[in-house]
Image (cartoon, rainbow, N blue to C red; front, side):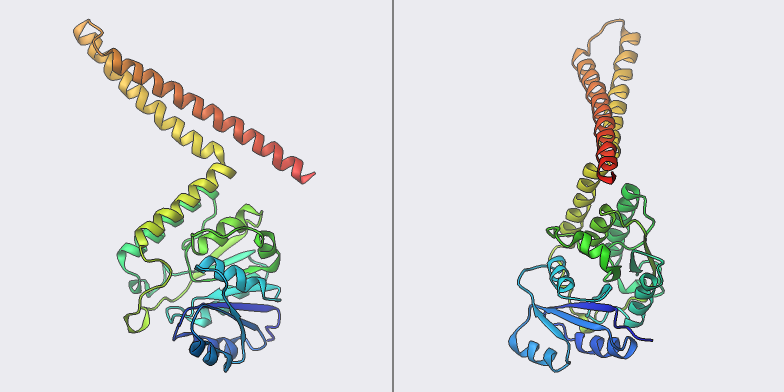
Length: 300
């Protein structure tokens, strides 16, 4: 089988495991284009050039920017990536790419979270990944299991649709969010193996995993606000109205027990909460209706 229609991008910063990954990809996918987008020193780049791959010196910073730069320099009908840190098996990259090649997905990811080696990921990171993925699935109604996987592939058309988007700090989820927003909704994943980082090395993705996870969640919420306003404004409005009703019921119970309206302040707060909540739901409905009209007009 020839793999001339596939381009694989490897983002590196002095990643020692990259050389073995390159060898594996060449053996498993002969003829595919391998692009290394690198932000390392001259000595490391010299070793990369010996591997006879296309080397691109990263001009920006960050994982998302690295992949965008790398994908722009490719020519394959399918673009893919794998973290070259030794935690992923290149054989799984082949399986993920084949899902796209066979027309089964616009974008396909590897799923680390229900594989046999999930103990390679500590509980803190696993909980964060699961939580972020569940938030994404709830907002966008796409049933994937690992939205931050380091293995994924997509059609060239899907990448071209987002090639002009300014990357933001959300890891792989940046690509998942933008591809789905661009109309490529056939996004799936499959179980893959996941190994501990070799020699106890630390991930270069983010210094603080907590802040990184909160930032990613924020992007999901903003995405929902822009592309599904009824969900965000509806949830917020419902919660406000519920809080107002509960507070109002407590005021009424106190009035019935004492015969005197002594909690005027709470009554006003309850009224304001219900009113603001109602207006929030109405705003969501109006914004959602306007968004649907705009989408229909764009489709004309």
